[in-house]
Length: 313
Image (cartoon, rainbow, N blue to C red):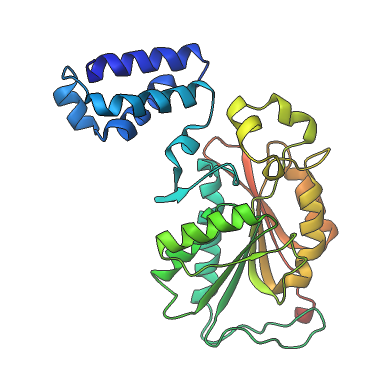
């Protein structure tokens, strides 16, 4: 069969299976199966596809017909210009989450440029604490999953500030499968992020200048209404935010102040319609400068706030 006929057949099969954007997915599967790019396809669309690769094409197509996510079939997803390994142990990075990474990078740069020496970092008892020699900024990524936020931030900051070890980034997650994936992503991409197991702040020590998180925020009752690829193949633990979707925000808002340096910043991704409630949770914990930021679809996507610094009274 020719490349053209295979692509048409694949698109039709995926459309019949109810796959969103069947033509787009069929193309990505063809690209992965035959190692052909757009230019090569346009030049040789009427040529016979290699017979020894047809089985791979059929296998991948069959997987997608079963609504297994394209990213799981291909084994990767692009985020912030980097290719991240993904699997059924981690949430597939979404384009809208890039805004959270970008905002974290922007905040970090603002803090770094304002510092000529190490920050005045105190622990919950008010005592000065030690960090890695030369470190000017510490960042914590809670619920790190694939590590896409922590690693992207690390790589972006390393270009300008990391010389050498001036930024220390920690990514934490409760699940070993996620941590294994995150560590492999860091190795492949040359990142220095430290990954550790922790149930939110349970095993976290010290304070951080920035705490960032994209926690589970889907209300439990809504999960069964999600797209099949999401509800069946994304880990439920990365989706379920409790009855109202706010369980993790309550815990983070309550415990974050003890782990933030003076004037430290908390940034979190939120779901649709959650901005007011999450802002209220931060206000209850005496955060200041609380604000929201919208994504490209003009939906509230990020809530942020600063730890109230009693020393400045």
